[in-house]
Structures are given as C-alpha cells and as structure tokens.
Amino acid sequence: MILADHICALIPTYNNGGTIGSVVESVAAQMKHIIVVVDGSTDNTREVLAGLSVELMVVDYAQNAGKGVALKRGFLKARQMGFTHVLTIDADGQHYPEDIPLLYRAHTIHPEAIVVGSRVLVQKNMPARNTFANRFSNFWFRIQTGLNLPDTQSGFRIYPLERMHGERLMTSRYEAELSLLVFSAWANVPVVPVPVRVYYPPKNERVSHFRPVRDFVRISLLNTVLCAFAIIYGLPRRWWRSLYYYPFFALYLLLYITPSMRRLQRRFGDSEEMNCRLHQFVKQAVLPLINGIHGLHPKLQGPNISPQPAIIIANHNSFLDILMLMSLSDKLTFIGKDWVLSNPLFGRLAKGYHIIPASLGKEELLAEIRRVTDLGYSVVVFPEGTRSKTGDIQTFHRGAFYFAEQLSLPIRPVVIRGFYDIWNKTTMHIGCVRNVQIITLPDITIQDPRRHLGYAQMSKLLAAEYREKISYYYND
Image (cartoon, rainbow, N blue to C red; front, side, top):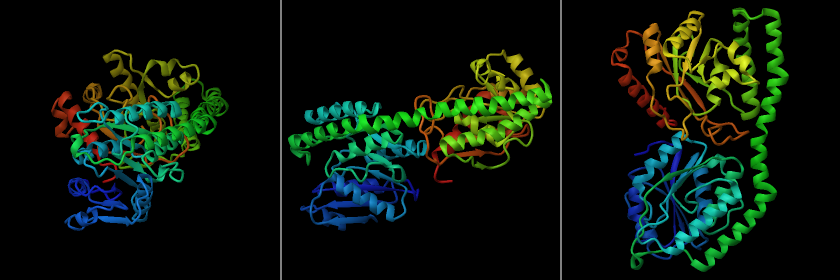
C-alpha cells in the first residue's frame, strides 16, 4: 500500500454503480487517500459508496457536467487538502488498480512529470471506434507537441498539480484530458508513458458514456483549435525555452569562464597551483550557470562529498549531474569520455580539471587515479557507464570497485535524484525549480564486510540500494 501523504487517488464517476464499489476497494488496497467525484449520477452510485468501509472523500453534485468538470473539481479538492500529486483512474473497471505501483514507481523517478498509463491499443473486446479515436488523437498530439505518446486517451495517470497547464481551458467532456497533456507539453512538463493492462468486458456487459459521433466531433474540433494554437503559441514557446539554453551557455563559457581561465594560466602557468585554482574557480562559476538557466539550488544531504580522497560512485541520468557535483566541491574530478577532453570549447578546461579519459587501459587508469588521489582529489565514477535513457538505475559495472580495492580507497556512494526530468538524453526543460536532491551515503571503508563480497556481488548490492533510494523519493 502506498502510504505517501503527498498523493491521492481521484476517481470521477457517472452512473458506474455496478463497478464503483470494487474499483474503490481495489484502489484502497493500493493507496491511503481517495477522492471520488460523483458527477451527477442518477443510479445507485451514492448508495454503493455509502455502504463501503473504505475511508474516502466524496465530492457530489446533482447535475451531470462531464468528465472534464469532474476532474477540475477533484483537482480543486486535492489542492485544498494539501496534496501535490493526483492519481486518476476510471470508475468503469477498465483499469487494474494493481498496476498503480507501476505508475507510482515511474512517478518517484519523474516527480515533475505527468505519468500516463499506456494501454495496448488492440485488446480483446476493445471497440474498434476506441482504437481509431486513440490513434487519431495520438497522431494529432505528435503534430501539436512534437512528442510521441502511445496512449493520449488513457484516464489512468498521475498529475503534478503544481506543474499542470491549461486547466482553466479544459473542456467539459472526455477531450479535456488531451488538452491537459498538450498545454503541459508546451510548457516543457515531461510526459512519461508506462505500459499497463486494460480490461474490456463483453459488449453486453459494457457501460460506456462515450458518444461515438458527438464526442469524436468534439475531439476533432479541439484538435483543430490546438493545431492553430501550436503554430502561434505552443511550439514556438517550447522551442524557444529549449534554444534559450545554448546561446546562454556559449556566452557564459566564452565571455566569463574562458577569459578567467586564461588569466589563471598567465598567472600560474601550467602548474598544479593553476589546476588547484581552476577547481576552486569552477566550483564558484558553475553555480550561477545552473541557477540562471534552471533555477536550481544544490541541496546536499549527508556527509561532505569530498572530505578526503575516495572513489565516488554516482548514478548518472543527466548532464546536470556533473555540473551539480562540480558546484559542491573543488576537490573532485571525473573519469570522462574522450570527446570531453578534445572539445574545442571546454577541452582545455577539462584537462586542467584533471578529467581522466575513460579510454585508457586498466593499468593506465589505475595510475591516473592514483596520481590525482595523491593530490587530494576524489574521483567520480559513473558505474552505469552512460546516462540512463529512462531515469532508472542501470546495471553497475565493476571497474569502480576494482579501483577502490587496488588503491585501498573508501567508496563514497552518492545518489542523485530529479535531474532526469530537467535534462536527459533526448529532452531539456528550462526555467522551473525542480525537486532535486544529492544524497551522500556513509563511506564503504576497507573494513566494511561488503568489501569482501567480490566486485560483482558488491555492484549488485549497491545498485539495489540506489534503486531503493530513488523509489522512496518522497518518503525519506
């Protein structure tokens, strides 16, 4: 059961008396807080809810107003009760509440995103008109936002209430959920699909309030309006916010960092004193950069990140991971890819920062790590090898543990959370403060029993610990 107090379930219902009871009870087995919006039901829905032993909040009104209105009123109630996120699920029994942990897990990795439970569009008993309408909607969503989403019609979602856009412009019926996605995507809110199961009862048992002709016409009209808005507002806004970063970064690098580095070289030459001053300068220079672009303020939880030389193990899913670590300490360096050292813009900076090329052989790497740790620096290793494409913790490679063992250095685990939704391998989102954290765990010293388990076992144990930390994003 999900006991987190920041999120509640929201179930809008209209004449679902035959299924609402089992849906609420199944959701209650997964979540602590539930809001049910009774959208002017004329059947026995209210009696069914009154007979449940489940603790829930009911929003009830007499006149049916449509799913869009029901969602609006549910969101309003959730905000009044202090929730920051809402999980929506339909009341017709189509979704499996047992899949809620799948959405919640994605939410803990992507707390700033809208998480959408994506159904397979070809299912047993699934009406052909539903399949067509969904594919039709997916196509126009891609045109309007530039994003691919496998199921834009699913009502099984998690919304971040503080980051939703277009709520005031929501229509009253089914198409309201599509408009929420489009306006939020234009505002650079990530949208994360999660595969879920779906159940379609036989035709004679099915209760559906979808009106094929009228609702399809409404969806078509909405898409026409959204396409017009996309041309004059949505896409230019999205592209501008993304393009804003690159000239800002280039100007900051060329007009501030590069001249400052040249002044250091003229004063200290190619000496270790110059490299030491460069580390101190970078620590101070990186912070205004990430604050100016992303509005981020590094928050370090746990011990100091580099009180003494160590092998720092950090998960890696964003370029910001590197910048944030640089802003926290002037006594660390990284094992990096060759292109970083050969880059014409910041290659010289990387060399002065003691970046160690990952392409070196094992013994050469060991010698370079020994050299920089003897100078008092910790070495950051990303054991996943490359940035995660999904934000999940990938398999940890053994190299970092080998280096620590050979050089008798402590292993310092650092868990990085929240940066994936700001800047990942495919997308960058600019300008909003995010809930991000950097957590240092206690050192794994030479005396720690885990150091005797072997590199493979230790890497598995540590990767599992990182996954647990990521999963309890809001529950620490």
